[in-house]
Length: 73
Length: 415
Image 1 (spheres, rainbow over the protein chains, first blue to last red):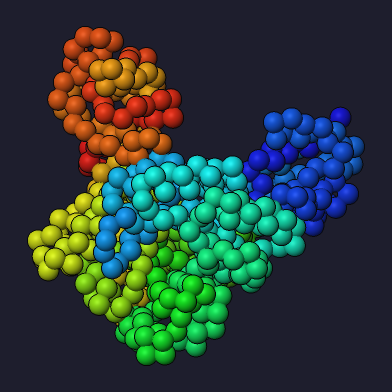
Image 2: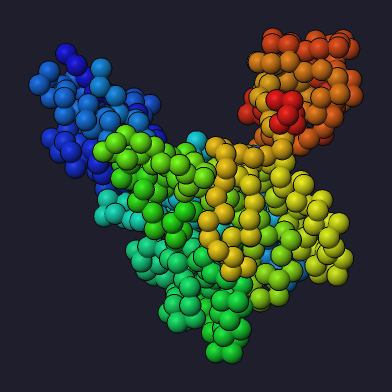
């Protein structure tokens, strides 16, 4: 199954991931950075398996991230 | 802090640069944390937990510390903002530099001294008077002429405009470093091109690239004198610093939180000497020439005096990246320190060095130190060359560790 990887530490809280794909992303009200919903992670690297038909949109999100901290594998 | 009327404010983008600024004679430094500052994308951004350490280092060295919180603030940033401000208050950071009204409001509520950022583009006395209700220092827009700066400063005195602290409002201006092709902070080029907002500290510097103009119909490329049509040269005012000071400004600021400790050290040292020279009436063409030469050695895109002299805009750079006359080449990291005999050991990770090379060490404790290696001790014995894997040792007064980096300085022609 494809997966989204979020390297959260370098997030600048621009909001674009949440804007493009609200089903997977939220902005944390605590530290202002993006949160990859239902993901599992440690040391600021979060991983979420996603269905095949969600990957196109996820790749667009990855491309839109200004600090390149979202990868889709 | 020196007992002088003018305050020299240097950038501290990392602990290395912070120490370099202190060693070079800065009266104060500014730094940013997390994503709410204009260098959010910078590799070495400090985090909230560093605020206490930065404050302690500055206090121990008798200089002031200002924190930049000058991006656009969104709703989801507000709690982080409050968290940062409570740390700022707790550790006694001297002031917050801000432009967003959320930060201004919060600082006022919490009783934190405030400086109005250049991002607010304050360009006239009425705007100064408006912001005087909230702040103690106003950083003027970088696009003003000296006459406009002077008029604002004299009008502050005439109107007796006081800041929140009850003291006469202070004026801060930029004296050195990168300029923006747009009015400072009002550029969306980076966002439109790469979805990366300069106003969230993530400028991708599209203006710094070379461009061609193409006729879409015929495919003909139009001739452009200079391909770098949007990249302004860097501000350098060391030759007009006396005129800037005589305008009545209080704080002189150097840009460059994303730049290395060597840049911070050299720029701070040159302007520190220039301020003292003006104070002691020994400011001379010979000294200006020396400072300009030293400033040209570190990162720059070619110099001009910005908008201060009222020259026509369009002083564009003619090359990508830096026009510095010297280049630093990374060699290796600190691997050991022998405190009893003050000997530092560095492991070479790439390249080579020879006796006679100028070496530079940057690190959180030493800041930036340059030394000429007369002889070279490699793996315990004198040697004509050190290469990858070798350990070199030399006398060094400051303790070093793995965070300290060793560079070789070469002139650009030899690079």
